[in-house]
Each structure stands twice: as structure tokens, then as C-alpha cells.
Amino acid sequence: MEMGLNGRTVIITGASRNIGRRGAELFAEEGCNLAICTSTKMDQLAETAAECEKRGASVMTMQVDVSNEGQVNEFITKTAEKFGRIDVLVNNAVFRSEGDLLTMDVENWKRNIEVNIDGPFYMCRAAVPYMIERKWGRIINFSSAVVPMGRPNYLHYVSSKAGVQGLSRAMAREVGDFNITVNAILPGATVTEVARETVSPEQMKAMIQSRCIKRPQEVSDLTGVVGFLCSKEADFITGQSFVVDGGLTVT
Image (cartoon, rainbow, N blue to C red):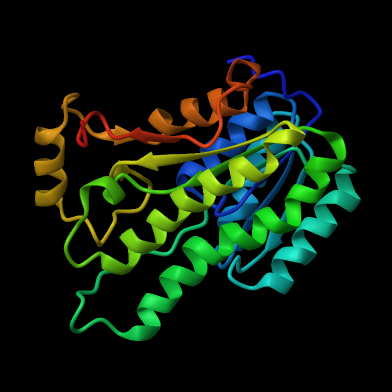
């Protein structure tokens, strides 16, 4: 896909593997500079950087807990200092766990909120001034297809990801005058490099059978949407939520 992003700077959180890594490789192939981070998996983040550098990209890596505003501000500042601009922000870092309403540890609830909604808020607040400066920007926030469905024992995660949709819609209203678009992607359960403890093989099989397109969802099903929303063809699309789950949540 020709996105018209050559020379622009892209920030991706949670880029050590899966969607974050594949997205970074996509932008590298488009000639972008990359600033990528992870909270813990620095060895895997180095692998992502190496793959992107093979594709000709200049890459900055950093260990960042997106729920820590100070670390986020340092990451954004260093990115701007290195590349001189910030154009695209992909908020992909995620925390997920199980827990029901009556027995859930409150700290578990708080951690979901801190990473999944506070993190994107901190990232956007730090990065948007650089986009305003250039009168151009693209922000993609990853929510989840469990939001329109609801799911038991996932209350904290669903709530935090619903917040991501609200954040995206409201922010689109605030920054549209600066030619900045803000959209949310809601993935279904995706086959990744590491099995998800929160989705059993039986649950995954049932999900696949309930989809309009009855096959496992791959990471590549999401990277194309990311690319499109950052391309010239999506200049007039903002404040929207794109469910990518093979038709599991048809409404």
C-alpha cells in the first residue's frame, strides 16, 4: 500500500511483537522514521527494530510504561529531538486480565485503566502539540471488539477499551481544525505469536464459528486497516471506530 508517508515519524507503543511489530514493519517499508517502545520486553523490541532497519528505517527504541506520565513525556521529547517531527501515533500497548465483578482485585481493575486508557491519554497529550505545529497528524487508538459485545469476567478490560473509543471520538472534535485525524480500531480475538490465556482454544473455536468469515483472525488483518487510516485516502475519516473481527459483532 502506498500511504504517502515517506520521511514522516511514527510512534508505536507495545511494539515488541504481534500487531505492534507488524505495524512497525509496515511503516518501515513506507520510508518512515520509527520510535517504538515496550514496558518490559526490550529483547523483543530490539528484534522489531532490527527488522525495521533491514527495511531502511531509522529506529529509536525505549523502555516505557505508558501509565507513567513522566516516562511518556521523556519518550515523546526524545523522539522529537531525534527526528525533528512527530506525525503518526499508534497507541497499541495493552494490559488484559480476567476478573469478575464481585471477586476482582481492585489493583487489577486499576492496572487495566492505567495502561489501556491513561496510557493513550498521556501519549496523545504529549504528541499532539508536535502535530499541531505541522498542521498534520494521524492517531490510531486500539480498542477491542469485546466492547460492543460485552464479555463476562472481562469487566475491567471492556470498560477501559470502551474509554478508548470515547477518548478517540472526543479528541477528533478537538484536533480536527489542525488536520489531525483520530480513529479507533476494534480487533477481534487475533492469532498472535503468544497464546492468550484469556481466550481458551474452545472459546477461539466458538468465535470462529460465529464469524461471518469463518477463519482465524491474523495480525495482517489489522495492519492493512492501520495503513489505510494513515494514508492520503483516509484524510476525511476521523472520530470513527472500525471493528475488525470477521463479522463476529455484526450489528
